[in-house]
Length: 312
Image 1: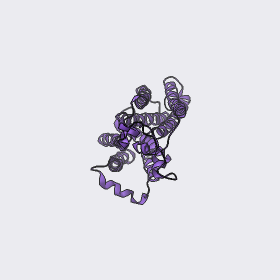
Image 2 (image 1 turned 90 degrees about the vertical axis):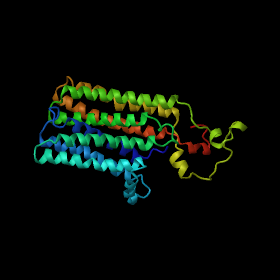
Image 3 (image 1 turned 135 degrees about the vertical axis):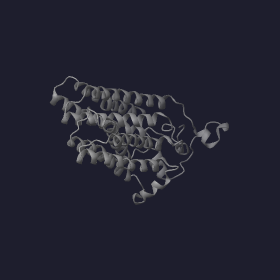
Image 4 (image 1 turned 30 degrees about the horizontal axis):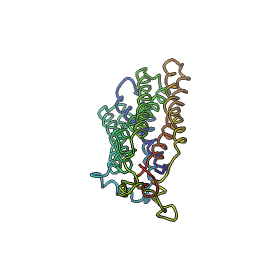
């Protein structure tokens, strides 16, 4: 598949924003988060700001952005429409939480929990947009929503830890949770790669054309004299050696680097811990951007069987 930059940015930063909102929502009203208004302003502002930027970035991938509002009417059948509805609905309880926290100094715990639930549901709906596509076997599996949720939670935890290092000393429990989220995210990503590498092809040129009984099928002549939309969007391919190299880079920047830097927060002094947490969050986002690029680049659509691909 063609890895569109707008969708890569959208799924990465909106996932981080909603992941941060999940943690702030669940932990609101507890001693783990500072109760001052400045933390509420920056914490909720960052989470909702990233979510909004991600949604705006997704608009650039639409052929007719001015018609985006029509997608909301198809929520009964479309995961894209459900994502749009839920992603906007989350602003209601999150706004209520922010108003109570900022202007009245009162944390509405129920609004925090509702914000967290809707934020998690938004990430799930985003993942299901791709999981529901049966013609793309590398997306049509349970590893996709699991990874979207794990990576959203991981990047959200890294952002929260960096924020807390600015305002106060983070609780050791949150540091350990962040470390656990990094390990879980790495395990989920490795599991997904193992799945797509080991799962045999579901469709071949023989099965797609129905000519398998006649023997091996190969493309005699391209159906078009120049690249068309299908080939541009569905026919992108990445060499195995390049994919392997990028996987190692993604593992190092998204998981290994943040894991080492986050571990420093358990014993490093204040300024060093804060610098390590900020760098860890930045590295994590860069790593997820690379991982998300691979997620699209390595996917294969069955339509490519009619354009010369041997198997998908």
